[in-house]
Length: 58
Image (cartoon, rainbow, N blue to C red):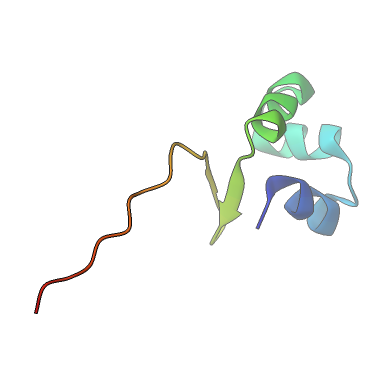
């Protein structure tokens, strides 16, 4: 899920509370939001690039 959605769901949209829980600053959380980080299985990930779609040879 998008990080902003995670913060909304688990921290009632409070970015400062999320930052404090993560041991970081609200400014850093804002950087993550601008960079479109996502949360998957309780882990924070940053988008790097789209991978090419390839066809598997049979």
